[in-house]
Every structure is written in structure tokens, then in C-alpha cells.
Length: 477
Ligand code: NAD
Image (cartoon, rainbow, N blue to C red; front, side, top):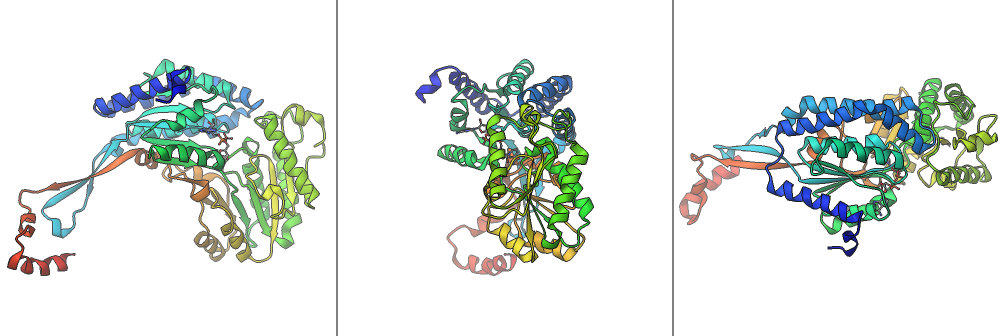
């Protein structure tokens, strides 16, 4: 055993993990009533403590718009829970699979089984949703689950730990502390599956640690999600939707539109329209409770540096008229900023922004847009606005991304029957709804041989009988 795991809090982590492993191997898999009981307890924890969660998250952010917590975290989770509770009996059923003629008479079945112990490492930006959405999928699939929340949300993380400990056996669902060293030790545990949501940089470290144990991973990572405004788009409509999606949670959303491509002739008009929509929606008062704060001073300074670098390199910044008011900084609210005329050399086009800064790049030929996207990491999301179906289908066919919303942003994420996940540098694997159940299950193929099956006819000595059967086998294959 790793020496450091003998010291608290790492010893608590190690004990909780081994107790789960023991039961996952030694006891029968949880049947439907046990899984439903866990999902319903999770639903009650959410429903009974909504206010406390909202306040804790807001305290962690400095200020988090309460309605955004409701929409993007609580309601989303309640929807996922309701769906899982309703569909679980069907998801758990052994599935019938057809059998190729040459194996008749026989039967094929696909049997979903819990993997065992699933670990979840979560980020800070939607701390409730990104801990509990994978957890409920893993619980539905019959696993025992350990969650490691983010160090950047200490109030939320302590509350989640307290409420889960009060409502679950530690061998059902366990929330770790966020003390120094826990994250690294957690990633080193030989889980049956590990879900990591966070940055691509840390995702690489976690995947490497998991790889040492051959632990399969779901990596929900970040990156730069492009938004394309086609020449055929209604600019008013597109810019309003982009402005909203960019400022939700002050841009601290993994699938936020990271940057915009617009036809060159409409660059100035597009920048002005997004800027105006942002001001209409969120105003200019840093105290506006609808507008969420930046999670930390470090992140705030990083955003300031990105804006400054873009301005130095020739971009035009559109900011609220009172952007220099010290109230913004005091509240840790970042003035929504459009970076018109961004170019690939600017730092803002080289890293995920994760804040209310929106670079807009001009294009002449839509083929250049596709070439630009394909020359960079596969994005987590892609957005396209317009009415030209051929242009839309060209982008859909020629680019690969985690998901796409056409004529709006973010909404593909909220579709309960669609998988959520990235591709390449934006992630691997997926969950949500039945996709989560399947990701956290072993879908075990089982072949049932019938007593009437004539497989023995193929056994040696082959001789003349096989020559007769060979023709039939070739035909059946
Ligand atoms: P982060 O990568 O800094 O941290 C994520 C988690 O990893 C935290 O819990 C942290 O404690 C843990 N961690 C850090 N170092 C570790 C290590 N060495 N070993 C094991 N765990 C370690 O990310 P963040 O700043 O919390 O979140 C922002 C990022 O998350 C953005 O890149 C965003 O795009 C991404 N994100 C992705 C999704 C998605 O669904 N794809 C959702 C939300 C956020």
C-alpha cells in the first residue's frame, strides 16, 4: 500500500474504497429496489436542501445567480433522476440479441451488470450537477460510488459530504474531503471506472494515473467551442442567443460558445449586436444579482490578461461604459467583453476562455472556417446559425465535435436521450440518461446453446462430413 495512504484523510479514502470493493465482489449486485431507494434518497437530498445548495455554491463563487443554479443544476438533476427512476426497470432488463443462422438453435442475450466501484472527480463550475449527474447514472447501473468534489467549492463540498453521509451508507455513496493530496490519491485508486470532469490538462494526468490500473475512464474535458454565424443567419436572433449562452454562469461553462466566426462584412454589426444584447440582459451594475461572479482572483486576473493581450494585438474591445468602475473587481464580476477582430496569434484564441470574454473572428470563405476548426483540437461543442441547409450539412459532415446545437447554443446538452461527451482532446466516453447507465455497466454478451444445436458435427475427425458441411457454412456465412 502507498505509505501516504496510512495518514488521515487519505486513510479514510482508502478505507472507504476497500469497503466498497469488498462488497462489490462479495455481495450480490443491488437489485432494483435497492437502486431505486438510492436514487430516491438522492432526489430527497436535492429537494430538501435546494436552498442550502444554492447558498453554498453562491458563497463559493462570491455570487452565483440563484436562478442559474436552479435551472442548470437542480432542475437538470431532478429531470435526470425522474427519468432514471422511471426507466430503470427497462434499462436493467437483459436484452434480446438476434442469433446468426449458422448458430441456430441458440439464443443471445446482453446482460447489464454493475462494474463495481465508480470514482467521480468533479470541477467547480457546476459543482452540484457534475458530481451528482454521473453519480446517479453509476448508482442506477448498480455501482458503489465515490465522489471527489473540487477544492474551489469548499462550502458546497462540505455540504455535499455532510448530506450524503447522513443519507447513505458509506459503502453505497461516499464523498471525500478536499484536503491536499486527496485528488491525486483518488486518481490512483484502482476503480472499476473513473469519471473525470475538468480541464484537458488535468484530464491527461488523471488518465495516466488510471491507465496504470487499467481503469477505464470517462473524460469530460473542456476546450474551445466554435460558433459559426453563416451568411444566411438572422443576425439579431443569433447574437441574442450567443450573448445569453456566453454570459450564463459568467461564461464559466464547458460548452459555452468560446469564440464566434462571422462573415467579414458583418463583423462590426455582429460585435455591436452581441454587446447590446449583453447589456440588455445583464445591465451595467456589478451588483446585478443575475450576473455571476468569477470563481477566484486567479481566474479574474487570467481573464484580464487575455483581454489586455488581445487589445495590444489590435482587437477592438467592446465593454460596458462603466467597465473601469472598481465595483466590478470588488464583486469579482468581470465586465462582459467582446473582442472584435480576434486573430489566431492572440492568447485568447489559444486557450479555453472560461469567462465572459467573446472573441469574434471574421471569415471570407466558409471552407476556411472548417479548415481552422479541423486544424485545432476537436471541440466539446459546436454551434451553427443560419438557414442554408447545404452550408449547415457541410459543417456537420466535415467537423467532429462532442455535440452540436443548430440555431442556438447549449441545448443539445439538455437532451435527456442524447449522450453527453467530448471527442479527442475534449473528452472520451459519455453519459446522461440511458447512455450513463450503459457507460457504467458491463454489457455482458451471453450465448445460450440449445441441446438441439448441431455444433458437434463440426468436431474432428473432419473427414468427408466436413466437406459436406463446408458448403452450407460458406452459404450461411
Ligand atoms: P481542473 O481540471 O482544474 O480540476 C478538476 C478536478 O480535478 C478537481 O476536482 C481537482 O481537484 C481535480 N484534480 C486536480 N489535479 C488533479 C490531479 N493531479 N489528480 C487528480 N485530480 C486532480 O478543472 P476545473 O478548473 O475545476 O474545471 C474547469 C474545466 O472543466 C474547464 O476546462 C471546463 O471546460 C471543464 N469542464 C468540462 C465539462 C464537461 O462536461 N466536459 C463540464 C464542466 C467543466
